[in-house]
Length: 411
Image (tube, rainbow, N blue to C red; front, side):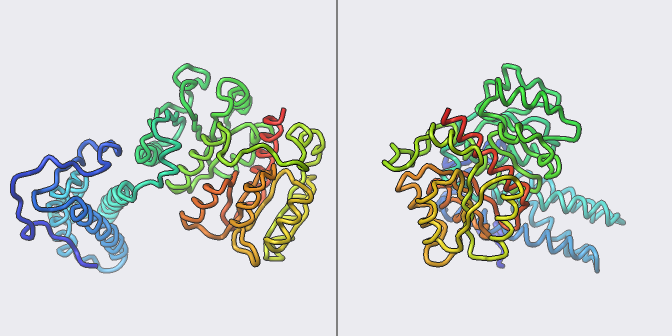
């Protein structure tokens, strides 16, 4: 990939007071910069993007080379170039980090472990800048913009990632320690409360908060084993949960969906004759009914067994057309819907469900991880989603939470 060298290639005349679009929204105080005269905003952002992409690639290359032959002269030369170019482009934190590693290598002899640690930090800095420049889908930003989000009990590294992600949407994160009182006014005033679960967490306090001052606001994150060990009533009371290992876009999507659930969804409309009302459904669905749809017979068998072992009625279909016919007939509490299917894909089935106002929750189950697929499902009215491979326990927990919330709404 060709590199952008600012020095010697750009002529800088009088500086225009033209601040890069979106810089203020990202809250990057030191990264604000002005575009030199004669360069358009698009050209400037292209230079920034190319510089950051190249930095990520080269940092990874240097880290791999530490396991083989270390070309200290080459690495130091590249770091020296980054230090100058980054500052010119407005990435002052990269300038500082590059200079530190350059000095470490030039002063020699150096310890490989220390160089590796500093280069890893520099890679993280490049990656953070790339995430900030990537932009945020408007659906995420619109739901989160201006919202106060409490961030409780996260380690420092994760707190940084959460705040950076929220900053991209215009949300306002509020940081609290793990022992913060969940009933205090500062926490209660937030639109969402994201708590990282740790071993030994007091489930009683969490349940009291979810059923009281934080009703409809409590969002839990943490290790899979910890979240799956939650009492079923607490799993059903939280607005959502997220396993460690999450990416920034997944965090934003789930937070946005949690906020969307607090208001009537855009596809809600008076139910058509022939479908039971919410009150009737709450009364007749003592044993929840799920329709699972997947064209993979092994996956379908797994879903059927998982739900039936949990005491849930489960009926199945292996294509979209039969699935829609079955859903119209039985009006299940929840539909677990694979996206990639013959005849009608999952998006088409979901669209038909919402168009016909069939009163059911829909969970998309898909092997696709591209952002636009998740966004499309979100726009069409999906209530939740899971990406294969998934944990059957997580799927069951999400289904139970949706069913409980549906019955609360009906009541």
